[in-house]
Length: 244
Ligand SMILES: Nc1ncnc2c1ncn2[C@@H]1O[C@H](C[S@+](CC[C@H]([NH3+])C(=O)[O-])CC(=O)[O-])[C@@H](O)[C@H]1O
Ligand SMILES: O=C(O)C(=O)Cc1ccccc1
Image 1 (cartoon, rainbow, N blue to C red):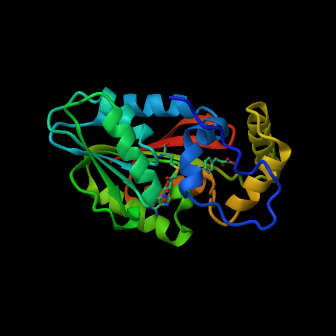
Image 2: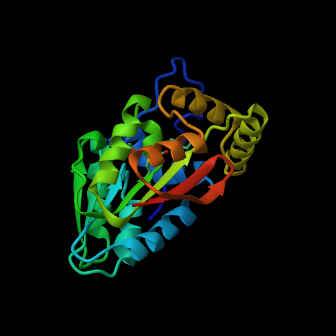
Image 3: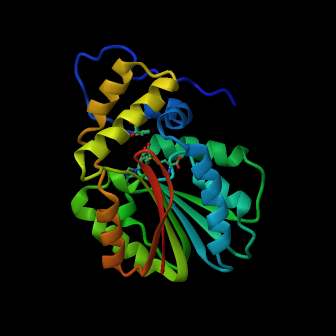
């Protein structure tokens, strides 16, 4: 499949509007995320491997904020369990519509996938062995984050896993700047101009709210997760696991 190049912020914008997952973003999303998130392909592939390790027979696996379903496809390819169902949720109608096409074009599998267009705050999590939020919690209002993590904890079976990937902020100013600069260098190396980097940064300012690793760990502990561990980091992009 040819990937349409992301040029959304290439020309100077007269009026800056908040970033949203609309048709224009959906159209270029695979290119955008690959060139913007260091290690994206590595994350997708290893989330499939982790999901296969923790998925249980007769249980559900959730992909919350599924976008075009990359995590769902990786899980579906790896999981070898009986009567395991994947629920993939996103509140962008354009994402869900395109994800449906991608899913139908994928090879057939024993594992059924249900694509749902809704706010993940409204998603009923039950009988779950695996829950993935790959760069989704960062878009949820701060005040709603603890309730969402609590719902996930309550819906997980004992021994179930939450895989949580996030862009981080660091409390130490110098460390924070180091990671932001390195991430911008990564984007520049992937062909984004200084203007594209700067305009997208402004568009994301009120939309993507990063927190520190300690804030995430604290929230997971408050929900009841006894085991949490960071299993991946490249610059300010991390992925954690929390096991019930
Ligand atoms: N309240 C919400 N309810 C449901 N979906 C939401 C909400 N808020 C945002 N989203 C959705 O969360 C996704 C975040 S992208 C995830 C990448 C994917 N996981 C991947 O592995 O390719 C990450 C990024 O682009 O940085 C978008 O599709 C939003 O529509
Ligand atoms: O591009 C960025 O600066 C990011 O932080 C990652 C990202 C990737 C895709 C959509 C929104 C944010």
